[in-house]
Length: 628
Image 1 (tube, one colour):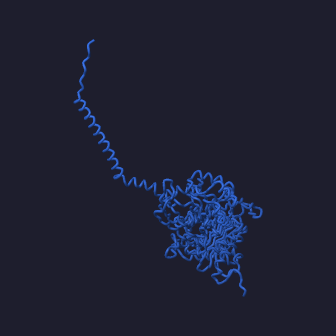
Image 2 (cartoon, rainbow, N blue to C red):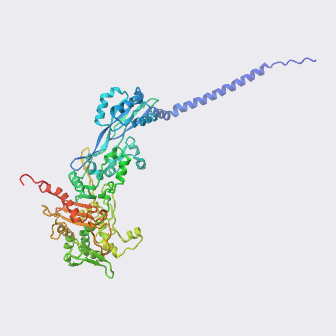
């Protein structure tokens, strides 16, 4: 076998290959190091601010601080809505030696509901152990004192104080002030749409009704914040920056606490409303809806059974009858209708009219009866107002028609929002041809107009609208919007609210106003006045108008029998009044549901309220002095 040739190694080629590979590797390493350095430069230099901000976000935490809510006072400075501290018992789990034993001991010591333990332990599992967790809120003063004595036995437990709204007069002002309650999902959505959500980051409650809701922005204030440094577990290490919150503004209402309490007392155990306001500037001195309810349970979270009891109460205490209750105005509007008739030339102050037992549209068989079965005989407009003759106004409505009635009465504010600073308001109905077609898909008939002529039929109004219309009447056409807010307490003193007025009612002759007012004077002081008994021996001169509104329609020959009619079908009693007769200072409207006649039931309430307002001005007291 032939022996193979031995190959000789080419050391030069191997050396060249080695250096080529080494150079390639070196260049690759340089490139990779270049990429690494470039990326490092990008992160450390170009993106320095971005990552520093992210780091600070992890290290620095912004904690919002809720502002103190503004207080609410009446016109004389009586506190109507305040902030009271409530005390809650909190436990920091990591500071407690034996958490369950601590909870059991506190429940036994303070005689708390044992069910609180399960809820507390569930909260502990959801939160970090260094955060304080509420065991129970709203401790009594006795419980706070008892815990303070024994606090050394419960490491990690502490009492914390928070401010919560409190209404010292309870149900008296609920339908004026409203109440606060916990912010819900709808509130959050509304605040987000209004770009106000950030200002409520530390706030748990918000105004729900009344003044609390309408002036929420004024009362709430501006939230503050503090920047704190935290460790990687979220524990606060130190405070870096503090911006104090701006407290909400204190506000003063036009409400007079004496008139409000008197009206509520007079309305006790009745369904209805009373409104007292000044005609020249629209200041609402009292606004009462009966029955009412205590708003304080809503602040802390009313229970389901309590709320359902209010919701299902047949007397409907949740409704603000003063601004949301809609009633037929009945004869209270006859002075306004008289002014309309004079201005339209339907009659003059001296025109004589014979009022029989009923009114009948020509060529029809239907009879519209007067409240007095045998009629009133001859009368002029003064006597028509004084005795509240229905036939006089049936005839007036028939001759002028619904278009004229709607035009004039709309100027008095009927069928419109009054402009009061409350969200809870109904507009009522001032009917027209278009309204009936849109609502009932029917044309307007002459018979519809006749009923409207005495403030009934489709016509509805709120007690607040009746007070405003009376104010327009006594102020001779000057229209003013009712106002609850008197002023805002600023750093330099009280900032008063301006008077809000609308377009005045211009008549062909100003003397037409005097005719209507003279008729109202005769209602309370005339020999035939429907309210003469209620206003007998008043030491001041006043004017007024009663109204009795049917709740259901009677058959043509059917007579109304109050005693044998079911309570909820009885007539509503209404009365509007003003005083003094010369240069009126105050107007009153009263509505009592299913109470019967306005002159016998609502007029005495109006008289009592006017007495309270007027007698101090005359230098007299409600109670006789010792000299008397």
